[in-house]
Length: 389
Image 1 (spheres, rainbow, N blue to C red):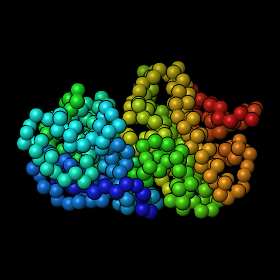
Image 2: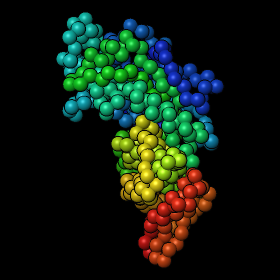
Image 3: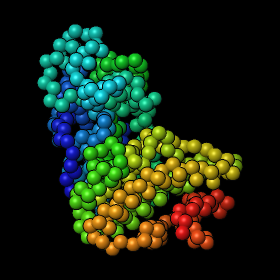
Image 4: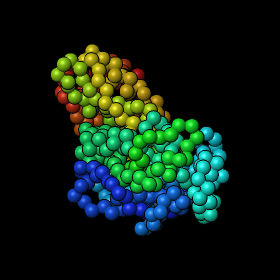
């Protein structure tokens, strides 16, 4: 499948240092070991590019290859780069161009280089401190290291059913280039190392934000792009969406560990959301992509139930909103319209048949998720009402 989006050509450079996910250390992946920069970054380095590669734009500071790079578990994955520079000024809706960049610099020679550079698709990595651990337009080592740690926890793409888009490599900017980038800042200067994340993603389709293709924005086009041309395929897509969505809602119990002192630790979401930080595979599975926003938290045993509820409620509306858009498009195209609650109950039962963490239980006029855990601790099981009849 060819991904759609605004085309972007980037220059490939050799990197002085690369960290590799332990799951990918045995493979030769030369395209995943390069630093990718736009022509507008050429004045900031004396390095010569060793290649050029066509991408499509993805989010504010990312790019993704339009053609797949490899196949895992029957799914095609595309090379994704995070930290290629931004096109937009951080403090306005204006494009980030030569004039604003030059106004932030004191070096006349560097200014002249910038002015004389052909600005085909201006995109800059800056030294402005952004999001606590990253520079604006780029990526910081602190955040990338968190992403790598989470990715290495997974069995390639799964943490007990919670699907992740794996980080394959952390590619460092040469320190000479990093030093020049850090001269571009408005208020606060980023102090850490600058890197790029080289990832694998199953598509560039997000739930609602940060992509030209979203379930909330153009679901009909997504049906066409993913080849959902009959009711059976659409129903299988929905089942996979529900299965992976419930896994997303219950990440804490899928990653939970006992600390042997009355407390339990697990993964939680920090400043990341289902609607903008996850992508969809063509068969409907949700893959979480911005792994830097996952963090370990520790709670007392008596607070585990509250954390389960909080994590479900945090993303439940976004999950259900997206589910509704998919189901409405399926019904509009192929008919077979069912009672809303009966349809969702059927899909939940089908999706959770083999789930080792979450089951279902009918309790009077309620259908409840029975949220267990990977430890098999019965004292931590929590029932969560998912449908009222």
